[in-house]
Image 1 (cartoon, rainbow, N blue to C red):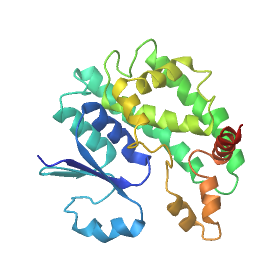
Image 2: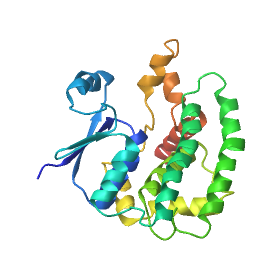
Image 3: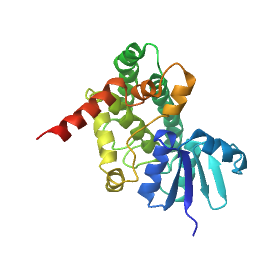
Length: 248
């Protein structure tokens, strides 16, 4: 039986929620990563995809793109993580848009060059808390977004919230309901095992190449500093790693 192929850049990005789903479902798959931009653009016209883009999956005769569409396809195929009732379906449709509202300003922050510090301060002081207030109120005492059952939207939300925490580790501390929600997801046996394996890549989250090409006057090093884990966080992480390695 041919393995499912998941194609994306060599980063977490929009493919990571799909990887989590495949791992949890126990689906054998090829995690095809395009390291150089040209590797993808050279094959893109010949991929026989209706709307050639990344991420894509090839699952037998099924060839499709777009993160949410792929996640819903997997949920339906495996009869898992699907909303069942009209209310659950309606809420999941709404959560998709809420997830975009959460992810997009964070992505914009990650690609900010000029005024990064001020943009970061505003995101964590204003934008994020407002969204977390609403999410926590809606989540209530439920384990997952639609209640006691996981759906495909939980995979996306937990990935975005995890990456946001990489930039500012205490950003969920005032929203313990959301913090426990994320911890619950990453404590799942199959997810935890995957994150401990060599298949999981913690860094990077977004593309260094894309950033450096947008502003040629900025070096690749500057692009790395502004990577999604955040300017200060990445440097602090490396310093902490060096301190641990150099301790007698």
